[in-house]
Length: 400
Image 1 (tube, rainbow, N blue to C red):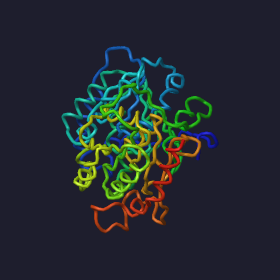
Image 2 (cartoon, rainbow, N blue to C red):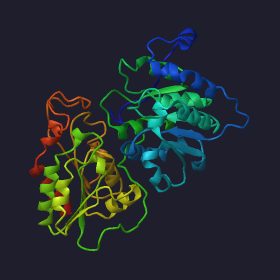
Image 3 (cartoon, helix red, strand yellow):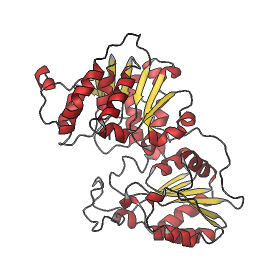
Image 4 (cartoon, rainbow, N blue to C red):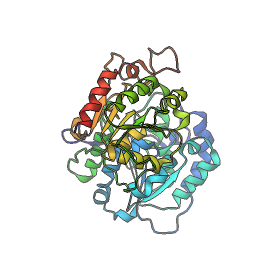
């Protein structure tokens, strides 16, 4: 499905009053949070409700994929841009002022919200007291007891949510909150790319198709803290999930090959993302290889990506950031939920991006890999990507 060719519909999910008070199938955590969530929900509001709140309790990559659709919200929901507040995550708070220029952004610790009762209570109460007229949550892959709970606790007169991916484990919890929303928008069955989903969701409120577009990020023009010299290529060998990492030895081999193309190489990432960091330290003895592992915050990483000649990255947040900045990017990806986040849809893939993968019959395993014996190894679909594939994509972009 794409937002241009398939109808987007609102679906009805109902529950009776008795079940809402005594629901079956809820996990223990739901019952633990319930009293505190109820208290926040019914705190009286004594000021006029105004504005739109959009809940984006997800990671950097998800934020990048959502950003373009946000610019349709003011017209679609009849609010001024200055009346729109994005509830985001601490992981990208440091870049939110520029990336979301003109919007209000409030960032929270999504991990603490999921686990810590008092923190959750304070956030629910704070967001309730914002007193918005409308709340929106359009993420398809979202955790139960997170955005839906916050949407409900805010208690806005209008709440619009997308129908999420639901497992049997989370069905009761999602059903509870979905049945209380004003409208539940069905953006299609899995797998559909997030860019298409965002476009489909906002199309419902614009009453006309909205086209999925490549990510574009507003960012400062600040020279990075990299020694002056030849153009450089950024290698990002990390990822939150170890299995999604192309083997580090392959990145090291690629770095040596890139030096023959009259460029320098800059390694980036968090120290805790790396395995066998000594491999990088060894190769970084060459003055044309710069190891910035663990030496940058997120804005500084953005500056490095912004001025790079090329970025080679695993499927992780910095990959999406690089594409959004317009930097030529080679993305090495696997098939855990192929087509949902990567690769981008053809019409929304910029000319500066190449997605490299090795097809396998076990794609769409949701990263519950049946073929990986050692949890400390890369997933076979990621490890199966060859040097020839990556080098060919690098050459193609370097020559443009």
